[in-house]
Image (cartoon, rainbow, N blue to C red; front, side):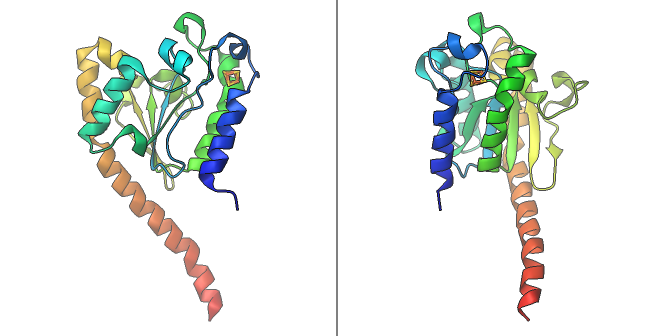
Length: 207
Ligand code: SF4
């Protein structure tokens, strides 16, 4: 059986070769994302910026440093989590990704989520939030409020670049991050309960 890490690496190779939208011709490197296939926590940003495009890695530069600092505050490193973006190639001059570009790229994100099956997804910024929350949702109102599904929670947060520009949003982001350990614990318990529920009928069939 192929290991989840190998499948994730194969998916990254497909993303690096993708030309499904015009951004594929403009990029230096596509940025599939990075982190372990068994990550419990997944961060989804908007799109690569200048340095990400040069290096082919997500969240390098000032936003990445802030993300690493916030992760350290809850006892994690970037190697513990999976970090990616909604759009895998840099829009020129860091403009907002266009709806058609998002539509073309989102299936890659969906395949990453399916493979990793994280307990908690943190959306960073409004384009990422819009993939999981209704169009009427506003980041200033719903940041830090998790949407709890069957055995996964999605928690919207400001983008680190926005927090770096606005001290109030920085405080909000720190408070939102502080919720992550407890949320992970809750979702671990929910998933364990779900697994017990799935195993129950099988055990009954043994007798
Ligand atoms: S942005 Fe996404 S869909 Fe467009 S070329 Fe890059 S990987 Fe493909």
